[in-house]
Length: 268
Image (cartoon, rainbow, N blue to C red; front, side, top):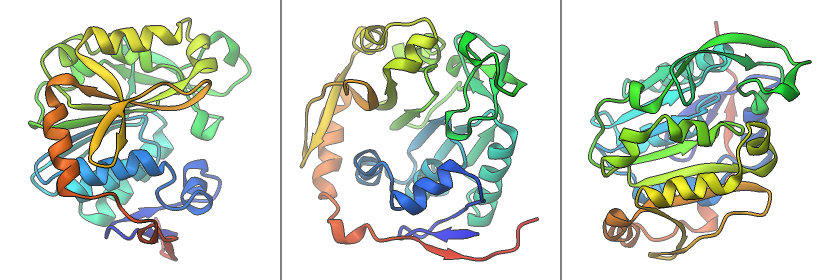
């Protein structure tokens, strides 16, 4: 079925999809703080990088905000979800979305990718020996992205591979952009990849970013959750512009967040 969002875009949702379940049971903007931040800071002509896009809820929201002059690059290695994302992009006429069937990693090549765990699909680790896998393309952010719009937000939801993706983004991190990074923080999954969570924070701070939390029209100091959630990091040099954009769009009131309207459509 098709779910129509209050921002004027639609997402195709299919039975058995955990991401679709988030839309219905967690309200349409299931990560309220992060999605509210996108709605307040993205403008026409901006860019958005969606790492671990799944069926594309973040990508569709970003595309509706950056418009035809903007750019959304969505990385989703699981073929079924990548095809569903592309179908939703076509349904909305979002030509600004570039859907790439690839996993973000430290090095480009191929990787074994778990496909039997829905929203927890990930690059295979030694603990995934019993999982169904497929071989998929792997790319680094540096190899995949050679140019960016002037203001870019990145979302990385890679089920523990976020540090690997950052290691493959040396040039991107060091060139003065993007402005905002929204990154999943899962202590258990980071450990399964052989990393310590502190590596993630160190990589960000070493490249001129700091953890923040939006509070009204300001960015205050942020801290990582104890076990699982998201962190938001902002480039120090971009904070004045981010706060200017926050002032332009006040915090969205709770009344704005209403349940989506499902519409039955024939797919395929």
